[in-house]
Length: 321
Ligand SMILES: [Zn+2]
Image 1 (cartoon, protein in one colour):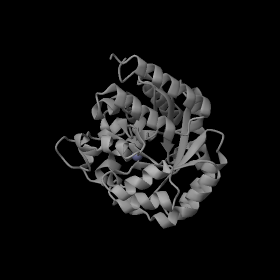
Image 2: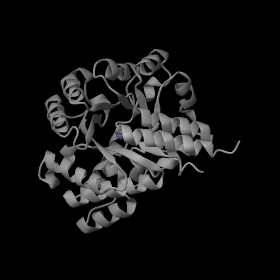
Image 3: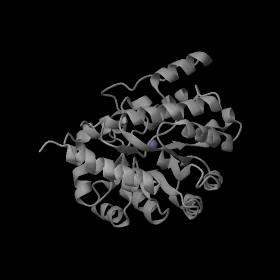
């Protein structure tokens, strides 16, 4: 009974960021492309330093077969960490040039999901940095795949680059199609941004939401609406937004906020799903509680949810008294 055998979900994971380092090395070498430099310890990196690394890695993905491979490998690696369900984010805009079209990128990811060892739900993510019309276009695309593998609509990238009011129509369209609305928020922006994502966008979960952690009013809003924070501990130190030891996860749970641990971009942050749990708590009961939160916050089908919750309880029973 270890954190690696705790049955889990991973609700916050980006396609390129999920690539195995060895796969990136292979694909980059094939294209004669440079590898992204590692983050240097004791340096605070600004967002562009992250984005440049991400873009370098993404450039190695050259076609639908690569997308498919990355999805299969990501699911395989998370399964080795106990995952029984994952939700993978893809902004098809970034992959359309090599996949033929926006839909082609989604289709390639779905083909990977179909071959994965555990069920994978896809989240089509727009970018806070892109024009609102494009978000609406992607929400329409996502909605067309509702019930066919796409389970959510996200908004990724630096949330300072967009306006909540501009993406209301896109999020409404996605929600009406039955998709979970899962924007990144409150990474750099204040708690009011997180609250706006909940009240104006109808967010079901917030990617990170760090700013909400210590704001009682926003915390209460999240708890009252059952909106989860997707916390990815290893993403914060390199970008200087939070130390892992300072994440108030116990306080959030005490306030009734669902906390779903995710890996975000393990390729760049050098961690895995099981480590996200052990880094925030070594108490198995707390780890089981967090695993349960993520299941509750997930878009997993009822049968998968029930099995996960049963498996978590069985795991917990093995905790030595
Ligand atoms: Zn993210």
